[in-house]
Image (spheres, helix red, strand yellow):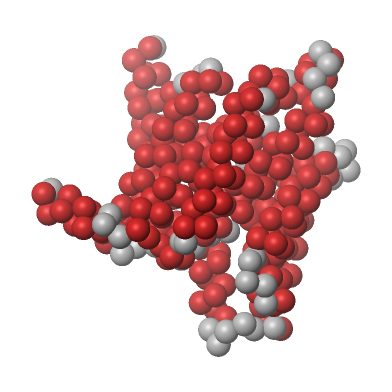
Length: 284
């Protein structure tokens, strides 16, 4: 144990490790806040669809030679989030079909662009790194950390400020409309915040694993808690703890950061499921 603490202390002497830890915790916190709302609204896989859109946008940015990928990735993901939510509410194209359509289409276009206009000799490695995450989280610059802090503050502040409205839209959208709440406006707000989280999380866990970062903490919290506020608080704690543990473990044993965080989230979900079953049996 002493040896492990000594190793971690040595690693945290490096600024890039501290940057990765700060960014990882902020992204996990933001994802957990929206995860509860998305799960309850049955839009769990909107993160999956938007992450694939972001993958396609990143491929387009790489092809055009942009040094700042966010100039393309962020606006494209934001627009897609709004369109996806509106399309998902359409009677002809349901939410799951809309997610599948946009997800597969964007993934195919992105991969095709990377093959037609290769930006490096090892396309497979580039694709794998983008889909499953890489060690780019350990190569963050101070400007990247500042951007993440600002965007995270916007996401957290917006969620806290509009908490009551988001709560109303999440549980009973029809009743919320009847009471004068502009449900479409707040649905759009949820979509925009989700898109920001997706863009933030791309370097941390990769586009294929983002959904797990959003869904697992919320589902774990729902095993034991019933109130909206309790689930959100528990989800945030789980997400931050798993992100921190995942980053530290990946540093110690040299595993992929994104995959390690998701495995930690999965382990917590299994533990909470077992505890939930034990509690239900004791109540009978």
